[in-house]
Image (tube, rainbow, N blue to C red; front, side):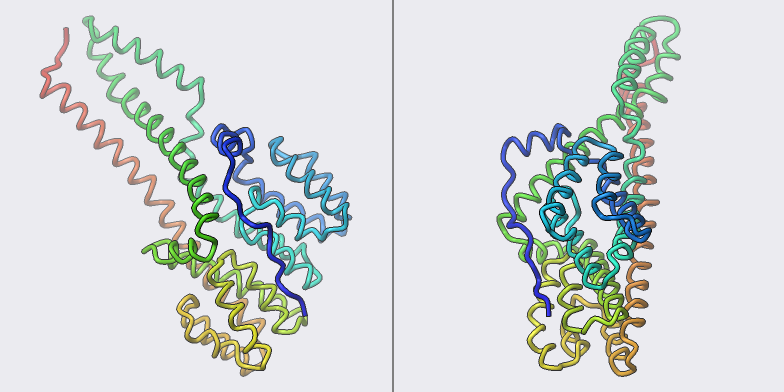
Length: 360
């Protein structure tokens, strides 16, 4: 029987860490953890030695910051740590539950499969955030310089007989583009500030308390529950299919949920589970698990096909999460477009009608 190994204790970021985070000095690309999982999983399933695989990934890292992360993981593995422990130590570089998922794969004897599944889930989230921030890729220094030059030209044209051209530049180019620059710049700073504040708040309150607060939010709460259920059921179902005992599999799967509250609740059920009680009966009164998930677990325990039914539950939850993210990814760009159109129209009305701005 294995016991859950807690990761490093959370700590408040220092001023230097906060500054390096905000300036991007220690920031890794959003897709690098998913890329690491995809590459490492493929290499392990191709029977490439772990040390050689880490060296290949380090040599091809997109950013120097992530190369340093992989170097530290290499050092941990060389010192005798399992890959999961070395990854868990890099909590600032990898998402929560990353190391625990790899540990579950090590227990099941196939960490490559677990890494590839984790890569798929991370890539779904990356695609969603990429759709929301795709316009931000246009916010380069060169484009900003072009915008300033166009602004100077448009201002000069407003004082000549070609004032209509100046107004057209302002209405159709400068106002929408400038608004997008301002919105995404402010949004980027706000997102970084919120991430830093969230990290500090999570350190002060603890993962369970901060997880409870997040679970009470109207939209985020149900999404987090389905996501945690999917990760727990997929990990548990896969481990059971490898022949791992139920209690050992639950201990490994509960840390891979990426939800401190779910992990805490499952850990509370472990003594009763060791005493032979039904997992479905223990989860029945837990509102964090959907009703259909508990029902499928009960059927699986009765029929002896628990592993397969858990994978079906995981697929169902993942499909619901993917559908929600897909709908949100289509809605937010539409709302941003409507905002820019409305803002441009309001500005045009103010300048041309209220201010009687018709020309020189």
